Amino acid sequence: MDQESLRLLIRPKIQDGRLPHDGIKRVWSSPSDGETCDACDTVLSKDQLVMEGVTLDLGRRPLQLHVRCFQVWDHERRAISHVTEPTISSGFSFKDRATLIAQNDLSSVAREALEFQGGELTSHFEATLTKQVAEELLAKCTELGLWVGAMALRAELMRLK
Image (cartoon, rainbow, N blue to C red):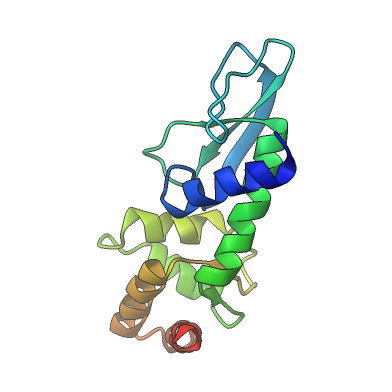
C-alpha cells in the first residue's frame, strides 16, 4: 500500500479512537507471528517485524503495527495533535505538577498525561493535552491555588477559541 493510502486509512482511525492519538510509553519490535496490523488490518507475514507498543491508555491492549504503518501512525498522530490539542507552555513547575499528581480525585487520563512527561526537579515542563484534560487541570489548579499553572492553561484554552 502506498504512503498516501496508508495515511488516508490511519488518520480516521486516530480521529475516531480506533488507533491512539497519545504517545507510547514503551515500544519494541520482534519477528511477526502472524499478527494483524491495527493500522491497515492486514496480517503481518512471518518475515516481517511487528512494532508493538504500550500506549498511555492503560485499558488498551498493546498496539501492533507494520514498521511502515507505525511510522505513518506516529507522523499522523503528531500532525493531528498539533491541530487539535492545547499545549501547556513553560511556567508549569515540577512542584505544581507533583501537587496535581498527588490529588486523589484527578482522572487517570490527566494523571497519566502529567506522569508521562518526566522532568527534572527544578524544571518546567510542557505537555500536549486534550481540551478535556486541560480543562480538568485548570479547575484543579484553580482549586489548589496553583496560579501559574492555571494561567498557562487558561491562556492555551483561550487560544483555541
